[in-house]
Length: 448
Ligand SMILES: [Zn+2]
Image 1 (cartoon, protein in one colour):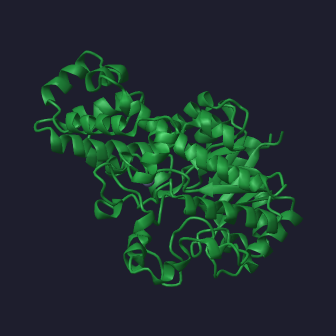
Image 2 (cartoon, rainbow, N blue to C red):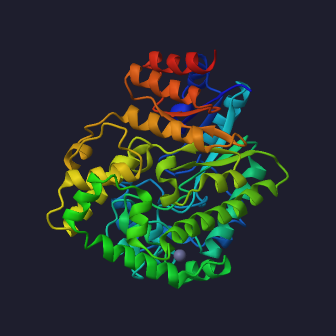
Image 3 (cartoon, helix red, strand yellow):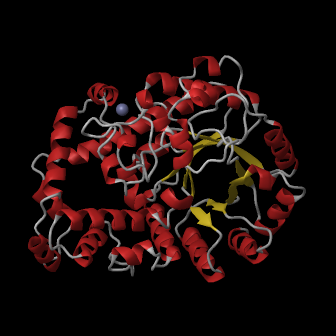
């Protein structure tokens, strides 16, 4: 099968004259995932009966909108960052790109978001942390997710999917934001803990209150770490299971993270069934957190493969594969050092690197070094691409994310790792016809 070479990018860019043909020629492009920074989907309209059942259709009148706009630095004409497809957009730009792509025999995967942003616009649908507080009441650096257990929201998203799959001759659907917040956001790791999620946990066979006790115990233990013991532990080669043994006696924190994965997988199954229910067979998948951190963000790759036809990876500040790990290490080390007096950053980071299997890389030994990007993004991405190669079963498409703003040498290195790890292609972002050399590297690597 021909490797998939996808482009996740701006629909405005894709709609410029002759751009798709030229990117096809220079990069071997055969799939596009267009996105508008104004409506946050590929630019769909919806049938009138769909907004009629939407719990977020009234977003324009929400008193919480101004703070949300500020949080995401949205321009005045931009829609709020919400799940599904809200009404009021004109789909002519998308239709034009769809036609042109199909004329060039390029697949089109439509793009919509799900839960991980926009929750604060609708506090009654927003995620809650383990203390019962709305996420927007605390640190909002990582966005404010919706709760994934709000039936009205999920049923409406399913209706959006059925509607757009029926009406647009797309070849696939790329569901974005189908995740919890990046696991660097420690406080959000312990959510959603609302009553609806508790009820779902019960239905799925989990003991929510036991998990909650386990999480509170974990938090308390982490907040009282003994710096000397951490240092000694590093010296004797402490590993993941040692930490688990030291922290817990009933392993409820493992159940918690599996519960979160099961919850998202069940919802993705509902969405997949909505797409399949139209009678059209299209590709269906999402970007996932990089394998090392996937379980903490709601993604169990093995389960995800049961409900998707492909898995790719995220781009950008919060979920880009080069940043998820370093951001987590910096944020967690800062927390641990703040809680444990006398714990040096170098010990906190050494512990985290070891537990997540990053001690084989050359990452900085200080938080500021991580935050100032004092490491090789290509090395981090390559690391995750290789791990993804070991995790995947080959039953569904596996397309690691490829950011094209690397040096040519680094791009070659990531492409080599993708090819050697047996993936079926890549999804690229940062496509720029002014840098043909970069596009040619991708083409030549995967079209041989
Ligand atoms: Zn919830």
